[in-house]
Image 1 (cartoon, rainbow, N blue to C red):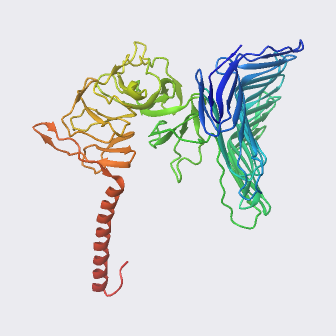
Image 2 (image 1 turned 90 degrees about the vertical axis):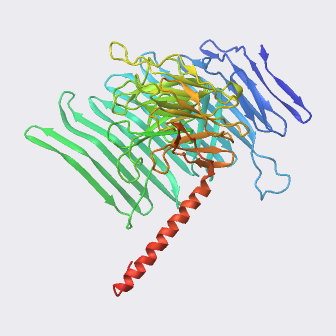
Image 3 (image 1 turned 60 degrees about the vertical axis):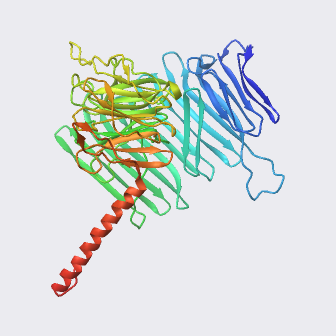
Length: 601
């Protein structure tokens, strides 16, 4: 049985067909695909095709086939060996080279996609296992570019254990590749440098052989740098334990190594804490080895750990208690935490830690102490999914809260702050699109009798919010009364933003401040000029602008904010002031130098 929308046009047809197929296979082979979807566009223009929750924009002359979807995976079993997941195949037209002769056929590009892949090879109790697998390959006349990743393990073999999260990337073309493939809520992104390029990365790798243990994060990369082929090998968080199974004789902890191999030679560094404990001999210390045979100074770097291909949300706060601001990065494939190392580029040595699943499309991130333990917890908005709270143990380790309550779905912005002065940080969420958008306040419910967090209440809508397309709600004390106020971005140029002043009990009231215009898409409340009053910085279709707080009260009534000024004009104003100051200092230094009988710098 097949069904789906079809739209004929004068230049072709586009649409989708869902169906099931009866397979007549030998007895030891079975194939199940609850959903088989054909999507196509034969017209010369882009068109969006929607079936159920799967909406995709197809380029001209495109055809794609998808097997399975979330909750209904395709699976293949051959003689007890099985693989399951969501699989997609797509063919799109490429581009003819500008120097190609007239009449040259348009090349075809094929993309192969996989998500939520599980693989089992061997017997029920022993063999090879792959979980959380995903992949995307792009095939063109210029070559192949792609990546596969997942959790890989060899299980059930006595005296041997091997496991880790692995990613393999390759690009045989001479151009950088940046593409993605989406099925429903599953997106796999490919972002590779120009080839020839090969990278194999293993995170949390563990190998145990007869009691001897090696673990760590390892990366192998072969790339082109300055026209020359180079190979980079990195080991991080390396631990090695050698012994007789009962007693450890040699151990290495906190191991690190980075080697660069190129035509001129080898350069690299090894370091770690080494301990040797054998009868009558004990040796412990921090050891390091540096080598360079290239005949020239070497400075090189390699990106390790999870790297965002695009950023959808940012927040900064000290989450591990070292008094250094850390960085939380929302991406279409999950939330990443970068811990500050306190030197140089503060986020270049410690790889990102993923918080939550890699299938989350993050739309908003905010930090605040929800359970009163003094550690910054994280509230995360997710596209087409419920907003979730992750509780911090004080050391930067996060677990999803079971008592967060319902924080709504489809959040576009999240703000955290104490609105009623009772149980700590409350949560404000702007969600929905168009006339269905709303701003909702979720008050903190405090702690249960056992000390665990009780979550938040059911939520109440903020009255007077723009009824068009609210995109952002920002908290800050605008009228200097010690209570958090709310600035709501309307998201529509024809609808004004609104300001609501906090009452101190989790509700807000209208303000007599001047009417705002030119609805914005984002807004931040911060004291820009250092006078102790929060100002407003926002983005609109016309760019970034700033409005300074009036910083005055009239009979205890706040006088509002001033007119918005383009940030470029504001910078130009301050630049003129700085130029004048520097000019005065320069003249003074010249006069002082002449009086001293010599030049002064």
